[in-house]
Length: 237
Image (tube, rainbow, N blue to C red; front, top):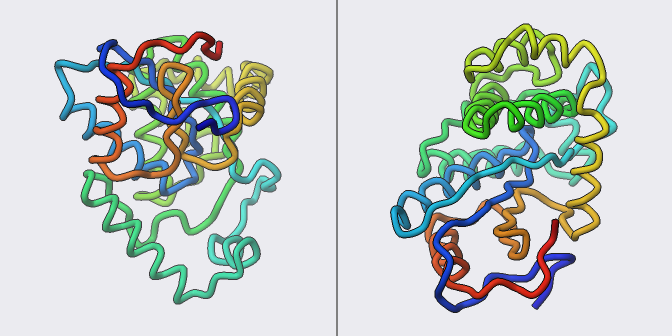
């Protein structure tokens, strides 16, 4: 079975080191849930299976204006959801987040903002140190969904870069210009063209796609299956 440019998880047994590309947007609450579940699954399969994690850009709201938009208003316009429905959805997400160690506060993500500059900074972080990219991604998710901060605010992003162990002055210079914009757009197009149209999307070894903020057990089962699968004849670059 194929989904765009990726195949679904197989069920054999061989490789023990995996590349995981986590396609997501920091404004997406299910991306925080999915990341927590994936990391929990990786702990369960260690040390037999190891992985290197890379975050790839996806913008849920690429046309969001600089001032952002009220979260209820945006979701109401997009999905027609009522306040009661949104409250129920938030509670379900809060519970799923708590189960994997992520805190969604009631006050979190009161507005939605453009996240392109955050993705540019994440691209730079990966070039500096993949571990720092992971730290920055987690700091950004916390800033949005726990602390209700504006992820398009350059001062917020510079502070988060520093907290992740990156050079704040270099981060400030990147944000002040247009560095990594072309590269970020190219990665967005790559995953969209490969069939990713919703996030989180977890792509393993450039071949296998797991969609959505799945439970820990689903990620664990897929990781074990994929780790033992013979490589496909053609992988994505």
